[in-house]
Length: 241
Image 1 (cartoon, rainbow, N blue to C red):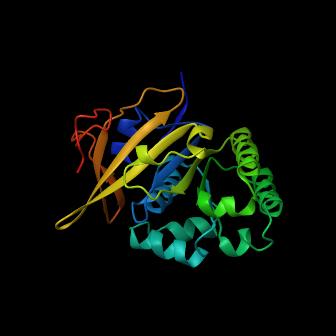
Image 2 (cartoon, one colour; image 1 turned 180 degrees about the vertical axis):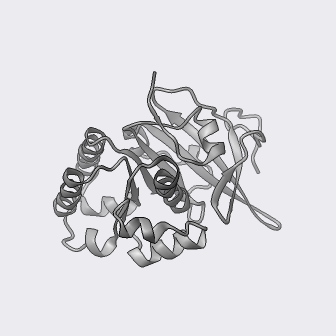
Image 3 (cartoon, helix red, strand yellow; image 1 turned 135 degrees about the vertical axis):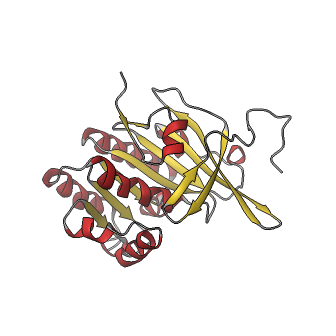
């Protein structure tokens, strides 16, 4: 029986047939504005609110105050209370980029993992994380080392990744193959705004629904409509645009 970590997003957990595999690392990819950080905030917040699971949020792009404002604007009104009492630990760019050295940032995290009992972790984003490294080989080596450390520490991790292409099959990076799961957030322009979709492309050790499902972002975060599959990228005959 595979142990799973629920995201707390009902429709997404339905697509995942229960949740994300415990102690795994999942890459959440999408173009700017697709909702990657929102999903991650919701994942950490739901962990504390719904499942009594403490979380760590590593942000290489935002200040702690920016994350608090984003969380509260989504309706996660207890975010700061959880930060204050240690149920959510936030490391923002001011801390992580202070030494401009990955080893220093890793030492900060390892110290926290030794002292705390955390279950969930978010790294937002992988693009900024990769600035620590000079070449692809070094990036791959440290990414593998980092994900192994997180798994050994009992953490179920989401990492965000910026994607330039609207549709993910046109832009697949090395990091997609180094992680246990791949979730894509897709947005397509319309005459009145954008349509949003989620696609779980890969999740090791478990069966998943591989269609693309509509989703919305509103007060309360992301809502996935798992009973309204919009289209499948598995069929070359169908066109999403």
